Length: 544
Image (cartoon, rainbow, N blue to C red; front, side):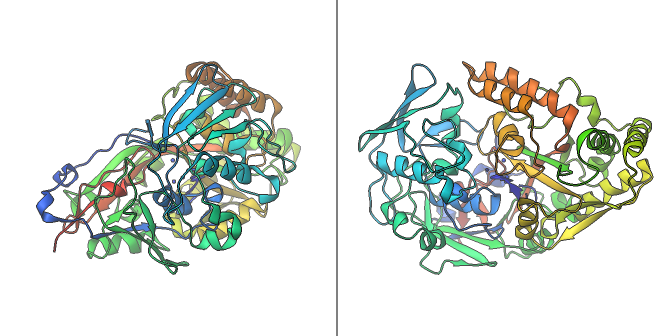
């Protein structure tokens, strides 16, 4: 997974290949749907996942393990279609005259699975709770532009006003043209009144309003699986064509792949590197390899010696130029990755692959050695450079390739540092306990350039694990968000990225495709969305 929704969201997406955006495609006839008479509408789809990092509260599910589940059991004001276009769900309309004050009217046919109606207060109260400093929600920064938000103390979101059960307004501190785009992210989901009685208990057995619900009080077996069944009262756009989902939390992608081969798993959205050369022949009519809004990188945190100030800047540039991205993506990933040209994703509208300073991502052995030698004049580096990664995410091969490229280019010792699980790896990063570098990744929460740049490297962002702090960068992000249009805002985001090429708080590696397979004997109509996540609700189970 990825921090996200990782993320694959926020989606914070740091796991296998997740946290998060393109049209669906397929290499076989099975994605074209099946004969309705040969499918079982009550059949359960089995798929892969990972143990959520936190209880299943939407505003704190910022990685792909939890995000995949939350997005299945909750429905927001909008959802996203296969290409990442927002589609009204609970929202009947979202209107504005100035991109600063938004009027939101609701459809009246949505209820939570306990029978409670979804109202305007279901949103405003949930957003207020998520934004409170004392509640320490990972996605609280999504509310930072709403009037009343305070990142340092509890404060009511005064910009939220309920006009009736079916209408409320949102007033922002400054215009934000991409605000409606963000409203499909899990942080903005509604919550029932039951949530506030015991938030801890709710996180273990959440009550949602989406296409699926938990299959009883003991549906979630920690570190093993979670069982979801269709919410029969759901009337939204994502009406399931199956009876539910069982998401198994695999510790290795190889085990999951073997289960699909053996007919014990229906859908897998992360091919292990050991199968990159064989998955198309293993599953000739049921595989996918398509672009997704997933960015992968490594970083060296600023709190470590040798990675601060001018020395750190020189070393980051040297490391970047010491990595032969083209060779690694060809040999390790067999064409399922594309060398990065920026810090976002080429599937996002407004992407620019020709930014000033991006040549720091080119393999340049002589320049890398020169920069490293300059840094050694400031303070000699006599350590082993480590890159940490979660062992349950299928990263060992590429981390080894990256560290070998660094070692052979710079003449230093570099190696991977395997941390057993995604949860442990994320905790290490969140608590500033790294002793070297780390892999990282981001799966878009919503289709915007900002969503790659703000949550991972912006001031105060919960996923800014490198602890990057640049006033100039933060100012450019702010100008971009408050621009009069998405297109105008992207110009500032391009400038922000050009600054990142100088500072390299993250060192871009490549963009990830979603590579998946499914059992053609068990399921049909399998599609993958813009954020790499399968469109579970569309999958049909074949009759046995």
